Length: 331
Ligand SMILES: [Zn+2]
Image (cartoon, rainbow, N blue to C red; front, side):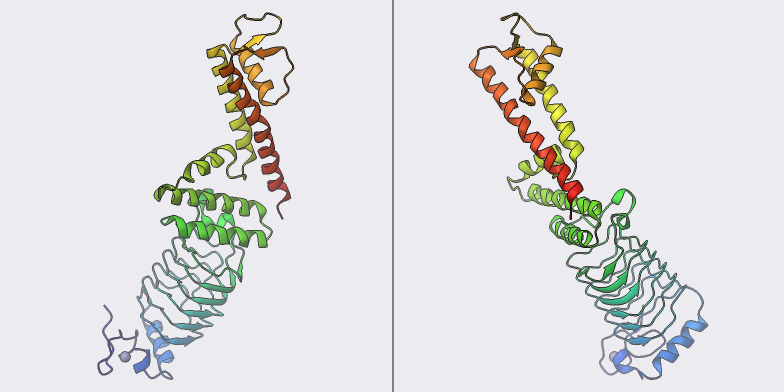
């Protein structure tokens, strides 16, 4: 536990290597005291540097897990290769700092203002970046799986990719559906802006999934149409799903036609038809080809059934073209 500040009636915890908080510490002498303290202890350290203002302090290659940097001003400091698990940088102002290769899972940069900073190859798994302002921040090779980026300003963020979100693109923190949905939406815009259309498609798909999760949790009736659009086309991001769901529909209709003996061969009216003939009839109905070698039995219910399939076919073909066009003509 960090002792409280020695200042009269001050409830703040004392800074590491000082008896007072930043307000009750000699600000001129403190950075030197910090450097000497760091030089003397080589092992793991849990620092309290809350609200301090530090320039050019070398904190690289150290285990600083759980340290507090909240509301700290850090300029020109190095955290290269440091372990920063669970560190608190909430509302910190971080500029010209280096976090290359830092191991910072679950660190919080919420509300932080970050500029001219490199997180290259840093591990930010499960990190909190909500409401963070990212100006000129490099994320090359950084890991952001399960991170919270809600409301973060990504304007200056560089090199965030689908890949940044982990194996099989695990995504951002999806604990709360609505913030996750909004996060994917801003990632989608970010990816479009960076010309990463496939990554944008991924974010768009996840955005819709989160929206559907929110519909389910709130009992919104839009849940079912949303689920249907996912199955039929992956929210118009997955053309293969249109093909698969179309084939599925054709086979299901075909089996239903066979069970009910809906079609009849024009060559032998009233006769029974095989499974193959029924699926074939289903296929030419779906595609609205209608060769005329098989026609429905003259029963009203059968005609209605055939009409629903004939209506679905062009709709699915249109959906396929739309999905394919979106994929290849994005941007
Ligand atoms: Zn104090």
